[in-house]
Length: 189
Image (cartoon, rainbow, N blue to C red; front, side, top):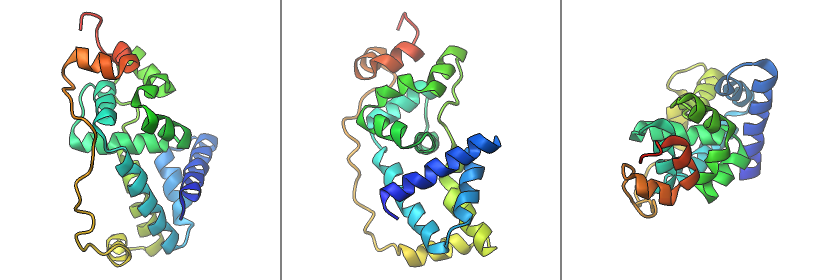
């Protein structure tokens, strides 16, 4: 599955979710479970690729501002939420995470002082859930994934996350993510 096909699956699930009023992750699982097993594995591979590409300090800082803090696990959920927002928001975020200051869910969260915008844990498990629905077995995905992508140490290379900085330093956050900082940090900071 190439990237265009991956994003077509995401957009199809988004359209279905909007039309049915069902949660995006449920629409995505339903969409994927109608695919052959090989295609679900290919989707999982592309998901990991685009998810990993957002594993950067600047994106984590954006999640930290939006979420009022952000653990390792929460950062996984945040990146899944950015993916669930569709290709346009994904690409805008990858170019400059400060672009999220324009995302409607982020703007609404800032107004409401909420901290859940874009954190979407269940999206991380859509391929697994779809595969298990298709195969009828809770262990089916892990078994198929082990054959599809055997681990031989090839994924052990360190990730370049860019320049690390102090998320708790308001001046640094205003410098690096000025629009998000204006939304989420108090004026006195």
